[in-house]
Image (cartoon, rainbow, N blue to C red; front, side):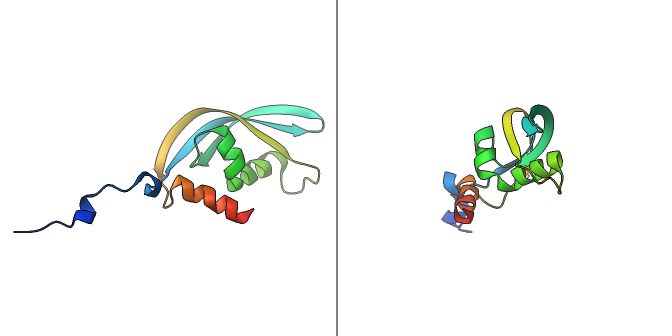
Length: 108
């Protein structure tokens, strides 16, 4: 008779679950030459609300700044994620959401 390993039968705890990665359509505002522009763009992220994307998604925000301003823009760059319009599941990350947030806190 084959005995199964009880650790294999247990589900991972919520903090250890892998974070889903989404392709998100977002409404983003940015300021350039004293004018505010709004665009709808697609963003790849593990976070599912605008506040978390702006606070913890450093790589995502850098990509948006480079997309709107380019590499040679010298003035301040203001990018705001206003709302998420659509969300499509792509895959799972190797880290949990909490681990992604911890990575940001260690960098700051």
